[in-house]
Length: 88
Image (cartoon, rainbow, N blue to C red; front, side, top):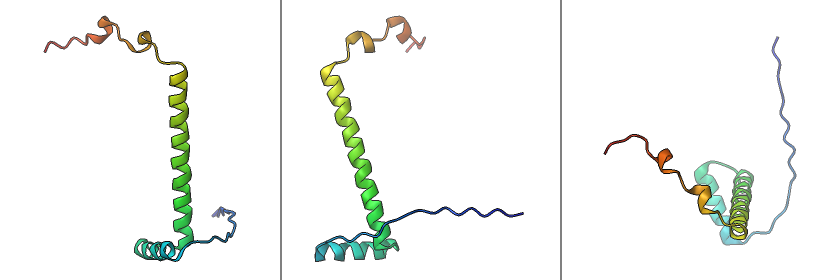
């Protein structure tokens, strides 16, 4: 017996304003990529959101280390632990 699973992705239709030159560039690129405007815009928006989240995480990381800098004992390695037995 075959089981067929359907994945339904709910999408909304939106309207947006875009200048002529940008639309022309999008149309040229979507033709080259063999994709649709909608797929291209979705991908661009997903990339922008991901980039924003990364920047926000980096900002929080820097902010936390600015408030409470790392102490030398947190990153210094004991000389014994550093000796791997390599005789160069």
